[in-house]
Amino acid sequence: MANKTLDLSKSVYDLVQQHPEVADIMASLGFSEITKKAMLHSVGRMMTIPKGSEVKGIPMEKIVSAFRERGFEPVGLASEPSAPTASATPASRTEQLKSYLRRLGEGEELESVRADFVAHFSEVDASEIMEAEQSLLRDGTPLEEVQRLCDVHSALFHGSTCGESGQAPEGGNKFVAAMFAGIEGHPLYTFSRENEAIAPLIASARKALADGQDAYDDFVRLRDISIHYAKKGDLLYPLLKVKYNVIGPSEVMWTVDDEIRDVMGKLEKEPLRDAHWRLRADAVLQRAEEMIYKEQNILFPICAEHFTEAEWQGIYRDSKDYAPCLGVENLRWNFVPTTDPIAATATAPQDEIRMPGGHLSLPQLTAMLNIIPLEISFVDDQNINRFFNEGPKVFKRPAMAIDREVFSCHPPKIEPMVRSIIESFRSGKANVVPVWMEKGGRSMLVQYMAVRDADGQYLGTMEIVQDMEFAREHFQGK
Image (cartoon, rainbow, N blue to C red; front, side, top):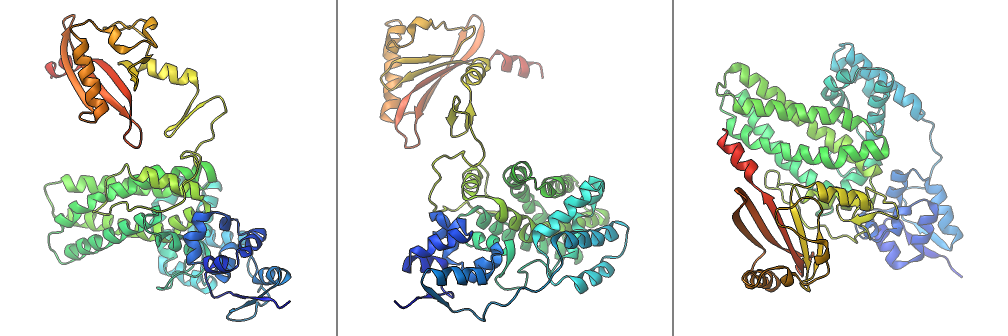
């Protein structure tokens, strides 16, 4: 029986649609991502097998041989696979990169070091840059020194990171990051669009400063950069550090982010925008400009190398809690969701209560609810008392009232009001009803709140009682 033709110039997605068994063969070779439907339908539409070979470091000879064994004849390669050429080991490359960084730290001019770097390195991967900085830290180089030279380090590699050619990158983690950045709604899509909004504002402000014009308006708009940095600090750096032991971004980039944000905040508030102010403004804008380079060519590829599909989904969900940066909205990302929203970041013991926001043991949850300075009651959708938190209460709630109808706990003159509130929640006419009152000479706020699920279906009513006397005392004391 004749071999089936496998056109390697086609995307992985197209090949799997044509020959479903391609997915199993690729998975057996180490392309485990292909088993994830979301990855196949997103990155798979843009990735070819030869490009995947470069990204994963799996020799094409091995791939071609495996397909031939399964009855396929691969075609479409630009040239026949050649024997791998000898190259420096990863360890020796790291030591060589560290030597360049040390020379910069000792005060040697950037262009002098760059000349030697270019002579020995045609390109460098993001992970190699990060490993060199982390190795310096492990060797005892003070963190402050690495942070101080962070911008100079990245300037050394300009034009030499894998895939940095002005065209679509073809190799390494940069290629995967670029693929993610092209998927509408993916976190790297949003981060990259934010950088595209930040970059021209920086350029405009720096030009105005150079021309002796007022750059204050652009400078104020750029304060939105704090949103972009906050998302990195909350969603990217800690995950790299804690789960993957990639400490460079959190130890170095995070600090630089904070410094840029702090300096910009101080400059914005200063009324005198003299020559000294303009020099400081240009310096911090240059650092922000350099940070864009570091994100696109170092940070994002490192994240693309390590983060799982479930982790990216978690980052996508959490990103919605942040305001838009310079008008860049979080677009919808169409993906196949993981079965557990927190599976990417936490593993709960069997005896713990799992929730979208995390997981707690029953003693932890009970103690947490009891220490909140509120009186909390919950009535289910059948009007039955289901929960009271413990502790002293202004409005007594006997434990015997649990599993009784809520109306039975109110005097006849109050019952119609309670029924009316609950009915307004059930019908969707209201969500919150606040009631202020005096009780024992103290100001009290009682809030009745509709509890609904993600689809807006009514689950019950929560009553919260808060002693507001502390607020009166606070404001009267001012």
